Image 1 (cartoon, rainbow, N blue to C red):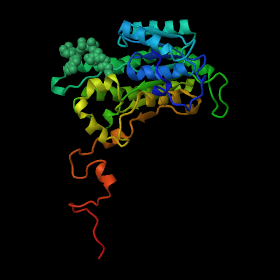
Image 2 (image 1 turned 30 degrees about the vertical axis):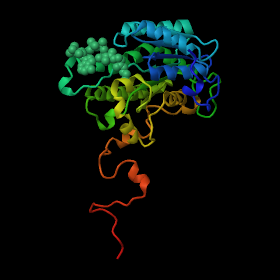
Image 3 (image 1 turned 120 degrees about the horizontal axis):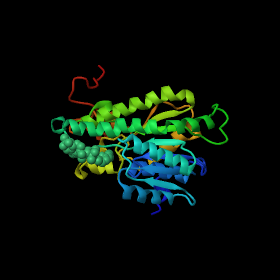
Image 4 (image 1 turned 90 degrees about the vertical axis):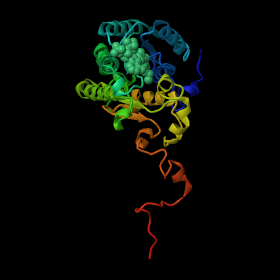
Length: 314
Ligand code: COA
């Protein structure tokens, strides 16, 4: 079903900036990744999305193709990022059927809430395997194509390459490991690994012209992640702790993706773009403390009841 453009892309980008480009995305049938791919397709790219679920992946590919008349979007199901051979075949098929592989989004992830005491070794390993090993397998399967694309689309930083950009990878990570979060040991460790991998790719593959960056989404509304990880009754309190005062949208992650793949981000490499409305910085806020966030800040009240309050001048 066609999705209105304003749900997945801002008006600031020029149509056609990704003409003749191909994006390969793992976890592409998910709510965040499908919006990222839909935005790129709208702006001219063709795409190959891969996922474990055949029906869901094929259906999403058809749906994303409605973003632009003439778009080609392939949906390859039964591809598990833990299995390098299925990924290698998928990347090869993408390059053969669509002509190249210019951008990669490593988006496949596993997540659930569990305290360490209820997290078996295999449960921990499953998330490490999907997130860390899966991202590594994605890098290995796509690097030759990315290197080819990067070689063709280099920029000197002043004159845009006439054939546009290419040879770029984005890892979808998270912010939870910046401060730590209970019930998320497995994911914190995994996402720290994903970030380190993205940086290693930037260092080792940068000389070939490849850029490798991370997008770290915060709490994004209407996503599988929010459904899996948050109780609806906790949302009001959660939103209050976000400096932006609301959940993010998939469009805001898609916009960040377009930026990193565009000519505007030629010199951005090994970086993390956090798109969270400032949320991770308030993890330390005490929701039931005396100086309620953000109410106290907005109230003009003066800090009182602590020794460090402002003293009257004598
Ligand atoms: N709490 C504790 N342990 C859990 C769990 C939970 N909620 N869900 C799964 N596990 C454990 C299983 O019990 C198993 O461990 P065991 O063998 O010791 O019993 C281990 O994790 C693997 O589970 P399994 O279902 O066999 O793995 P899978 O490969 O089929 O699925 C998961 C991977 C576990 C990440 C699953 O949650 C998943 O497929 N998620 C969908 C994708 C997703 O999470 N996307 C992220 C959106 S934010």
